[in-house]
Length: 458
Image (cartoon, rainbow, N blue to C red):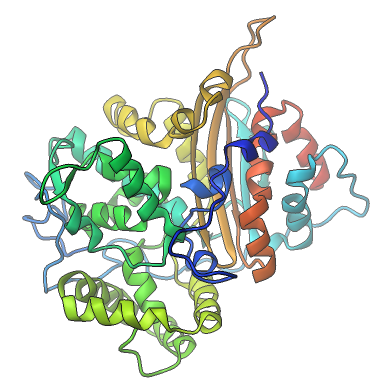
């Protein structure tokens, strides 16, 4: 059975965020990963034993950041270290007729601007016959990096370090939410949880195990940062290293990243501030954590920041976001994320119990979209979006053919696009051609070979 990517439109979550202003504003400038269809519905503290930063006997049920807030980049590099990626040559005559219309803009982008793409796609068991475009290039990840947080959480649960049934104060979780960001993902996640009876009591609480669902299904940055701070900066970075990620830069709290791009206390131009971070990565590593601490712990700072952001220039924030995303947002390589997705599809990583927990959250499309569980035996997905950057990781296993009983091997795709012109980025949030590209490769047995020919790979 083949479920074409175009069918995703029927299941799209295309409504704008309730609190997002009209036009190309907050929902487009600061979108965690709430873009349309799969791609959108989804872009630390010190290593104290009582915070669980390095493992230890247990982790406190409430995520907090000590005043001695430490720094990002405890294990991993802060900024990318790789030289320019390889360039893929464009064939002289390209026949795009095999490519579905919805996916064609993504393929055209690969051909026209290969330096801005990192793509890895293959059938499991036939990895050598896959499609690769700059697979080891370090590129911005946006919310795709949240799979690292998910695995770190799953390992902590498996080890008995956290109890998934622990009740968490909703007010504590909301401390990590900066209104008007992540395309309304966090408010939608809260509303969904309320509708399902997952929030109760006075004061209101929710189960810890619902927070990863908010992170993966809705791509709530607040949920991600809560887990990030609960487990600790070192734990998140060490998880990435333990997964074998050699091209990964340090994931810093999303809240701190937003504030590092612009905040009410800054007296210099945001682009100038970003340049200062690039010149002194250690300064950024400390400042991103300092800002996270200020927002979550000082009511006066948080209130002033929210008021200031209501009147901030959208264009100024857009330009700063694009520059920040290209150079500072956590970066990684499609080859490594594709390998991780294949590992998960095959029963890894770490242990069967960790795998079970990870797949419960990563395969959210099978629960969220009617009919998907009839088309796929397994479908794992996470996407990300930040201005100029759109990313997605996937694995899909279709149900056996009704007549022959044959089943195609699982297909894995990691498609990372960055450096997109803002108008293109805004259009792709709506049309999601990179999502259509992934599902073409998953659903059509001939697609990988056809794309390889189109890209000049023979």
